[in-house]
Amino acid sequence: MRDWLIGLGVALACLVTSWAVLVLLARRLPPGPLRDLAAFLPDCLTTVRRLRRDPRVPRRARIAIVVAGVWLASPIDLIPEFLPVIGPLDDVVVVALALRYAGRQVPRQVLLDAWPGDPRLLLRLLGAPK
Figure 1: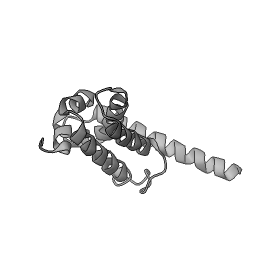
Figure 2: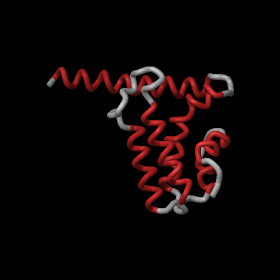
Figure 3: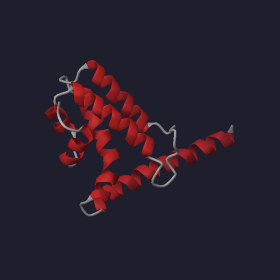
Figure 4: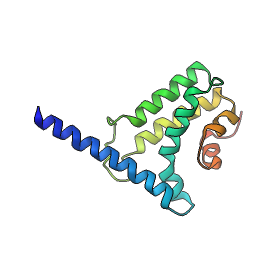
C-alpha cells in the first residue's frame, strides 16, 4: 500500500509540475505561436470554468464542456503527461472537439467572452461561422 501511495504522490507531483511549467511558459514567452501553444490548456480550463456557469450555454454544450474540463484536469490520460511535447496532446484534442461542438450550439460571442487568450486562436479552432 505504501508503494502505491508513493507512486500516486510522484504522479501527482509530475502533473502539478507540468501544469506549473505550462503556466510559467505562457507568461514568460514572447508573443507568438509558442506562447499561444503553452497558454492553450490553461486558457481552455478558464473557458470551461466560465462557460459552465453561463446561463446562455445550452445543457448539451455545458455537459460536453464539463466532460472536457474533467478530462483536462484528470491525471489519467491516453498519453502520459510527463512525455514532452506529446503528453498534453490528448487533452488538446478533447478540449478542441468539445469547444467545436459548443461552438455550433453557443453564440460565438459567448465563447469569445469566455476565452481569456488571443481571440484569433479560438476563432481558428472554431472555424468559419455557419
